[in-house]
Length: 238
Image 1: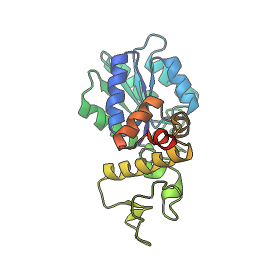
Image 2 (image 1 turned 180 degrees about the vertical axis):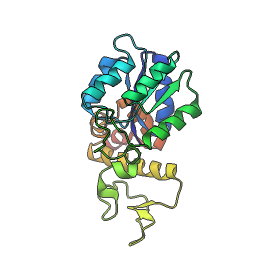
Image 3 (image 1 turned 90 degrees about the vertical axis):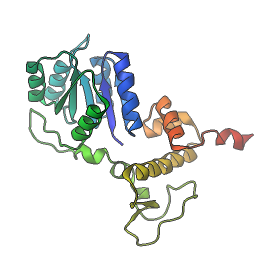
Image 4 (image 1 turned 90 degrees about the horizontal axis):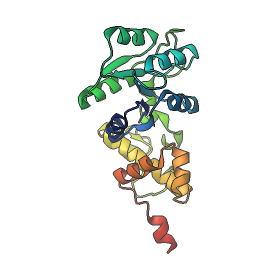
């Protein structure tokens, strides 16, 4: 699961891209202008940025150049526009953008471009070096989450409903079988992950939201998607 920042002044495009990327399992942050994008970037480096070129306050190319000059362009950035010229796209690439999406953006084109962007290391135009690990690893939940699940005691397994992994079986990560499709393994991991935080935060959605870095609306949708019951606190206290 990657953390993706979508920067676009059109609310319809922001919502559409957010829905698609969220359904793919990514965490999505939204910014409607360069000012919000700057704030989001300073809070935490995203794994990938989808950046619109034409915005009312600061255009995307100028923001890209600003990040590059400040040493903040250490994540893949994909530019978006419905009426950009070839020269604009070339300039953005020269500054450090990894790709370009032309609006209207089709579903398959979006997913293919995002996957390619996450899978390639970023080389900032100013230094052409990269000290952070590739975004492809950051996009994989097995590598991004804390290590309690990576074998050993099931400290982060609050529900205890699934059987423990066979000892010394390298086809398991904790109790997650690696002999299954990636999406199913990811869902199983996320189910354990959110059950853990719900238990330890006493089902406080505010604290779980802060702990996991998911906005509350996305958190509720994610829990519903994973089939996790969020009403147990109420029923247990009744």
